Length: 517
Image (cartoon, rainbow, N blue to C red; front, side, top):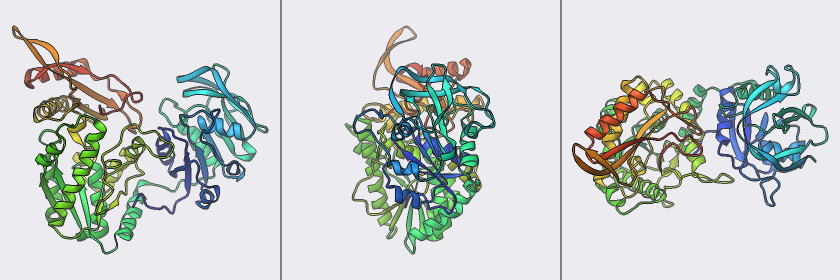
């Protein structure tokens, strides 16, 4: 089971391989319109059968000028459904309708400025002032408009930044309205959805709860559900939804794989033991996971090992409790997007997406698969969960297996966990725990010279990572106060044996990822 079908009006984003594709979905939902992705080559009759109010063509890494580039059935552009093309989608629309697209003599990546050529009361740009900052990321450009289109905006370099054929409800923009670096993006999407697409805005996350509970109940029938609990908000929300759907036929199981943060297993067992009572089961499998990870250095292999070991432990332990037909996972859409599939390139696989074995004994139930982290947090609050769960720091399923580079050993795990505890304590003590979206310590598989007292040391460096983001698809490094960074560095070097220096990661996402592996 994936996300439940919705009775609400629908906007479809056709995916041409953009890493930002689900960010478009998020921005549309923020306008209270339900939105889902579909592959770009979905047959037009099947797509129109969904009765979409509007369609958005995503960006993508390919060039429309290359042979074999992802394309679109031109029949969709003649269907009468309002369509907005973004970046690659903008260029593809122009090319399919008789315009000219060619490699740009000047590439535009990053911050840019555009001038809107139409009045503030006109369609797509209604209520938007003429001169605007935006985010560009393209090499090709629309060099000639298709018949019946007009330029709606141009960039500082004279490149067509937006085009439209209002009477046909077809529009294209070269910039990315879905990213925060395009401040007027939400207004532009609102104009497209409501003024052009005729949406009413009937979707709220509260409705997701009722619809998902009903979908779980329909999927499970009379069966029993094993709810996998990591202690994080995603798995906790899934468990709460499953318990609400099937009551006593759901059992929640927490597996301690030895890769959690310092003190976390005890906290999880205490919190969920009190919350769930007899339906909560805790399993200690630390030795099994560390044995399985011996000699493994490749991060993708680590994810596969952790994912498969999780499933085998759940299967073995659940067999002691009775027969379960279904198993839940707190998979989110960023996990799916980064793991790749269809036209989207793989950034890194996630243990609960690509790491699951093919011969699983249970049927997966993943009701959050189409949601973002912040949407899940909102649902957690609506379900009455305490803030300690709803706003718990994100933590990867493989845990410190992907925060310790190289082979995972007990010594390296202990160093990374203790350093991480210092990072969390100092950021939270500074009152920044809710301002900074994610913060942790990573342990590279290298050694570095240091001096302590009058002697030479040769220990590990610790890398501190702290980012700000509202969607986890893009992120900026957090500008932590110097005094906070100083306290973190001093405490780690003084308190964590085996560390000789502390570094601060100031890489954005992209080009980096939030996690180190």
